[in-house]
Image (cartoon, rainbow, N blue to C red; front, side):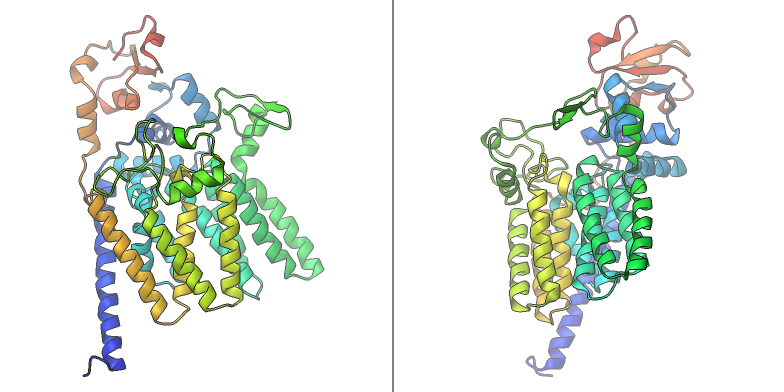
Length: 478
């Protein structure tokens, strides 16, 4: 068989696809083992995600572990759907490591969505998504950014598909869109504007395709479903007269009272720059650590606040550039209703995301990168043989670079168990000094929860966390 023959080329393509399938299955399996075997050690995980999950699921009661005032207010006001799922997995398996699965399952779920909706091969989607550093890192953690943003990305893609097609979106598409919106909105408040605009655009598309009588009935259904989507802010408005309690903020001169100011932080050199410029600088990774540093990409992109790359980057700037070029090439090479909708929709998403608070902290807005990856794959599988090859090559090169830079530390079981973490961060000798059924104070943030009595049986005592050791008063302190 001649190397130039079509049959030889097809065999080569099948071999290439086979190798990619093996790579995707192997990588996903390795990361699954890491997710269920390695306990997440990140700051926010133990500062509030897992404490909230434990409280919701009843694994650690409010009597055995008392939140400090700030965390109690956050527990009452933050959207906690992801933490509830984490707590459920923890309680069912009796392993806090299992809470990582809430984030991990976002990758195969988005990949399955792309397969069912757009015909993207599963292995192609998995590799392309895991080539994004923040996606790969968050997939084995207890942060909620990945699952929440994955839901937003699905909502955006459903909206783009609704406009790209001349047909009326199905009832299942409507249910799926509202479900994705509800999941995102009840998991992360920063995503509410994107959810509202995307869901509004989807609903307008549905209504515009219906006759008047059906339109009225459908509009009533949509209005009835909206409280489900924005359940958390509506609950806060009813209970605390502030939809985003515990944050204190004002709108048009009206002040919504809360217990804390909105978070705001940026590198000094960008402190006065407009948000779109911050977003652009972050997606191309200006000022971040060099490729020779294994800490170039971390779960929250933390560096000392004096660094130029403080909280910046995480998408891999070169991968972003390649995908943008590939998207533009596909749009201009194959002008159609589909490519026009994708181009306009992605431009609108970019404009909106670039105006969001803290838009340079890319983990908050991973939906942008997930959508960029997804629309490239969507168009590629419809564009003939060369486009999927180009998309696969882009993701393989990026994935290889990310694995090399991070030493593949997030791609295989390389951490420790929860039992090991408790042993490392607490002291049984000090715990033994606590009177039975007594009360003790702890100021070991973020690992306060690890001192709770349920993790040191058969001891029984109340653990009260404080933000500063001086707040303990007369209580004994760990």
